[in-house]
Length: 414
Ligand SMILES: O=C(O)[C@H](O)COP(=O)(O)O
Image (cartoon, rainbow, N blue to C red; front, side):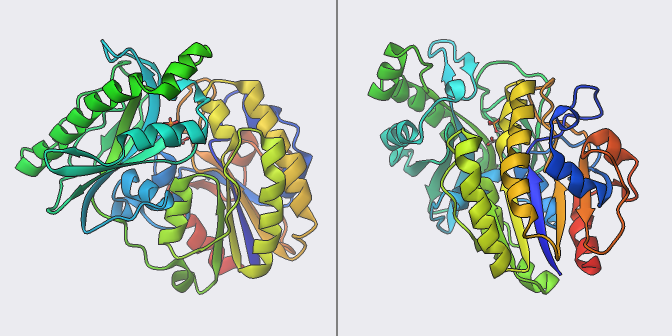
């Protein structure tokens, strides 16, 4: 039996009264959930407020503690950057800072940076040399970018983030509830010489980037237009190795395909050997974007056994603390995407879940468990009323402590 694996990025808000999933009018999703077995899932593990990368690796069946090597290399691959033998890759955000004090005014430069503006800004930094190391800077979607330090010798990834919103716990980065609003000094996390070198390059690059970006014509124009300048790069999740996954098709004996909107998810799916079904980059307007996701999914369902579809929408509103925006994004996913695909799913199992919670009350990822609904045609469901945290809490799947156990269990059932 085929499977549609639908991930609503950041949709959950936790077991709170005003949960977007509870408030949103989503008849198509709720209809599926009613016929599903349901539960709650800690996508990485209890106590982790994961980023999308470790969470997606986990819900695709791979323990991130064993496989995860940092977001940087994954974002680089998802952004089409060629990684040579020795490198250090970091996820970056174009952000707005006070260039004197390095105080962060907005971690995402107002979230209105166009991909064209980001590309122009990235190209002003791309190819910079620092102490003989060449720096590649590649813009991806909106405020997101990747920085790759190329080297002839191995570079250590044991360095801290300059983005204060995320902390490294081992290799895995977790969102912080509170943080000091300044660009953090990159620190070596070991006393090895190569960690000190990596940290030094990152700090020099960070300062040079602010000098160059603050004077860049794109930012002079943005300031004139009353927009925030994207005059800094916040960096996080350094990695010097590409994760090696057993190819997912071989692992589960089924063909997998992926539709995703962000380089990080596309990078993971590419590394697992999934067929990539490209869609236009998100415009920030779900009504405009969802039809192309829907048509691509209909095609993918005919091409592979398991279609992994990762929709970004709700996460953005969670980060911005916008409850009604988040509710609206879920309602649009329901009315355009899920209602549109429902007629194709008569003999297809569907799994609906999320990679992590991004509570609008927190404006960040949280360690709350995410709801799971698995509908297998011909099998009875739990009859829950609505796809949300509280209803799924009482589902027959119970609480799944580690997301990477879910897919292996499902693949045995369908
Ligand atoms: O949108 C993304 O890339 C991440 O999910 C959140 O990252 P940000 O907090 O840096 O925007």
